[in-house]
Image 1: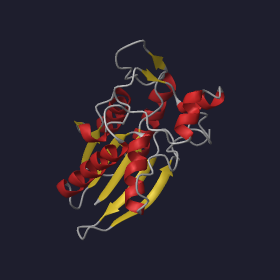
Image 2: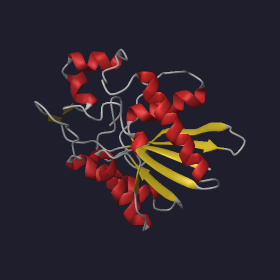
Image 3: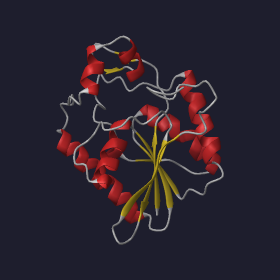
Length: 206
């Protein structure tokens, strides 16, 4: 089967004194999601899963709509900072040399909900459950940068390398999963639907 890990589109910046930020997509993010859906429209998808966080749900919605399918919410691919009271796109943190950018760059673990090891185990377990459920299928999972890092690092045998690369917004990361247990990475940071559009892609491309 083929598993498509898709990072969500760019959300708005939200910083709260208390409560969970869980921001919606920005105007640019909504356009990214629309272009992602159009790009994937020619591919047969057998199921679409998404993290419960709003930015993932809103990214998955146009993909599901063009395929005439529903979105299955799956908690196991929620980001490690899901209960944070703030969400600031990392590009903004880098541009201002914010201390939070340094924490991200240096791989500092900031979640009080679970340890890094627990997070990685959760992500890997969830991905493998999806694979077992969809033998011979092509399945999209709309999720988050930390989730994509965790699973691809697992496939590569790198251990807990949550931040070893940067997934661009609405980037597609394809994994071929064989019944024998073999896992192969087919593409990383697949974003032809954003190139030349002027829409933000991530830290290093536009």
